[in-house]
Length: 304
Image (cartoon, rainbow, N blue to C red; front, side):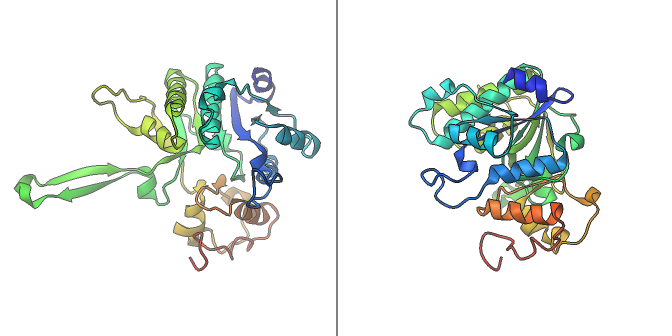
């Protein structure tokens, strides 16, 4: 891995993604729902966006063969899987998540900035040219409106308390670690260590654990991570609910655009038909079929 990072990094930064046979979806024993070749489509968008500083952690022989023989791809490595032994018997997704945070921690320790990327992403521009780098962590949000994404105050009123019955609270939507940039420093390394420790304790959803570790303040015997956070622009680093539903009139119907008007990327995190929506975005923004996404529903159900 270290040798690959030296070869592919640009300005001390690298994109990291993990891939297994599910991302190709040819082996029906592990992918029985006809999920499509997400890995192949993801690589096509990287090439379109001019992203060269990426490294793929390959988790099985099938994926390695595919990359070598069908994509002519060399920017990958096989991570040591010893770190998964303590997680035997837990859900496979939990094992992969623990491995991911361990790899990110290793890369941060080597002094590289890391953009962690899922593969259900369509990149239309090079994301490294659109980072601010003013915070420890710069992450996409699951929020689908500006107040939800960037934070808003709510209030309560308890009439039994008289004049002291009011109170404010802060709401902010979860960050999505499927597209998150971390600067290399003690705080981000410690955050990755905490993530690994939490996921080793037992079954847990890594997105929830990540947000707990990032957002919860120090209290009692709990010490917060102390990382500083920037939420990515929701109209540049777009989640699929923002694109297809909450801000649909902004994006649909499609129209001919200058590439400068395109978002940086779209993440299919809200929709189960991930590859279908990836293909429509590729057809629209890369192949120039501007109406390619217009017929897809906003939600996951017809007529939404």
